[in-house]
Length: 206
Image (cartoon, rainbow, N blue to C red; front, side):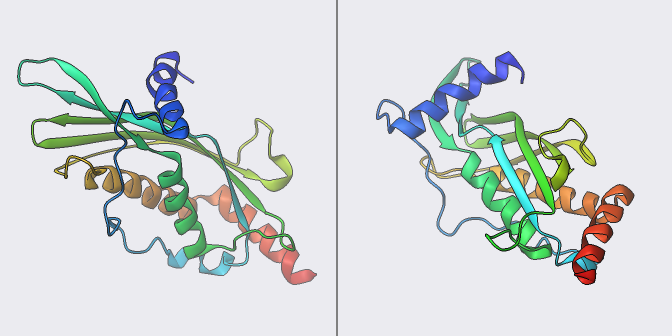
């Protein structure tokens, strides 16, 4: 991962996990913004018994809100959680289309999510969220290898306003747009279709 990005993200994860009071932590709005009501894709219905699992270990725990003044200066004003929000959206997309693993149903597919860019900037009353996530999809038997069936780096940017102590809606919009694009991609990718069909056939034969 880019060293500059590590320097930008890691201190925030420490602040969030340690409960440090020296920097405020933005809270989630109530209700949580739902910019995309469902990730369900009709092309994936025939693979609904495929079991998806996720690896979020390369996803940053948190990031920083940076404010720009009218004179061009910048300051770090708050931290905000990242990994738990990313987890929630990808798991929502998975449950809309596939099966969730449990002790009796091991995963057929593993998806690795890594944060590449997490920028949230406030300029007077406008917030900008600029996100980038790297996604790799592996057949379960190839987990931990360098042979993903599918990989892509997703980028999204959104703008909006917010209460000063809350994560702005533009963050949710950018994140949900990335997850929606990911679902569209896996629904149309031929290599993944072959993998899903193979896993489905094996389940039907048993």
